Amino acid sequence: MKRLLGLTRYAVVVPALASILGALLLMAQGSFAMVLAVIDSIQNQYGLKETIVEVLTAIDAILLGTVLLVIGYGLYELFIDTDIDVPMWLRVEDLDDLKSKLIGVVVAIIAVVFVGVFVDSNRADDVIAYGVGAGALVTGLALFAFATGKPGKKSREKL
Image (cartoon, rainbow, N blue to C red; front, top):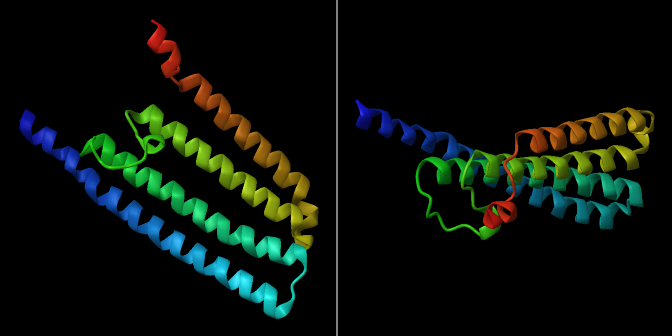
């Protein structure tokens, strides 16, 4: 029974691979949108605001792809293989590491979305609402990370 329960950890392979595939798709679409934004800007001589909105939309897709990639790698590393070849900053030792990495990327996405709203003249009335909402969400994420986080590695090394 113990061995059977231990094998259930491999159920994470499917969502990890699905997350990585979704990440690759979003990154490809975001990159393609970025190239189109450059071409459109040159051909149609878009103004600065229109170009910023298109570029930020493409970056938003790329950042969301990054979130999915971090989730996919993190799940795989936590449940299947701790020796996966990823950069040191992407190493996930426990769920707290995965949580902090995700919070960082989500905050970056929130910032990109807010700047997109800020520069989009069609959504000028929404700027304050988006700003307050984004600020509240970032504050909530920071409080969550602080309240549920473990002591930093530096403080553990001193103990």
